[in-house]
Length: 255
Ligand code: MN
Figure (cartoon, rainbow, N blue to C red):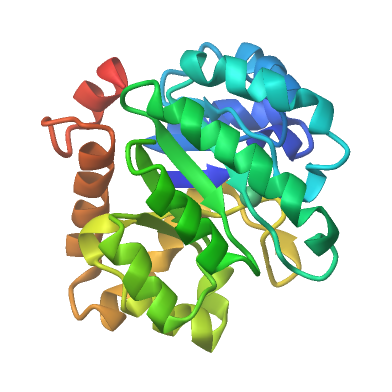
């Protein structure tokens, strides 16, 4: 139904897959890993009004793609959706953390110069540093923390900072992920897959499987699955600033 964070451009046969995604999902945010990828992917998916492409520079490739950081800043004015950006402080990528921070700062500062940006942020192993940055650039836009994996305290700080959260079946596969998700404010949560990187039983999650989070989250939040689906549609409308709430046709025309 909704996938707020996937790498549709990186699935095999992405062009044909996009057609199916556009018809099965109400809305899909395709995040990219570099400004160059954003340009190419935007062109390929241009005809799908309910597939949006985020301008990104993934922290895991900060070093390899450092020469694209100025493109990132320059293109922020051209893309309402920004992502995947953020920080990765896990052992493999910690060595580029300073560079990652500097790129993130530039991106957030540029977002502050434009209205209405929607950002999908990566924060693995660097949650509190990401939150520090979000606090420094409060006018950057609506910030969605994708696959949040911080502590309960960090979650509380993120909520205070006004962050949104995108959660997926892969995150909910762990006890910790489930516990965090349960403590998120229901009105600021959206489904994601992070496919094709995120998998279930060894198979890449497909963008229409993000909504499977209702299976466990409906009971975690003690509401009916159908109610939760409605809630998620309303959340999407609120994120995109649509007063038309859950009418998918209206949403498709104007977002
Ligand atoms: Mn991702």
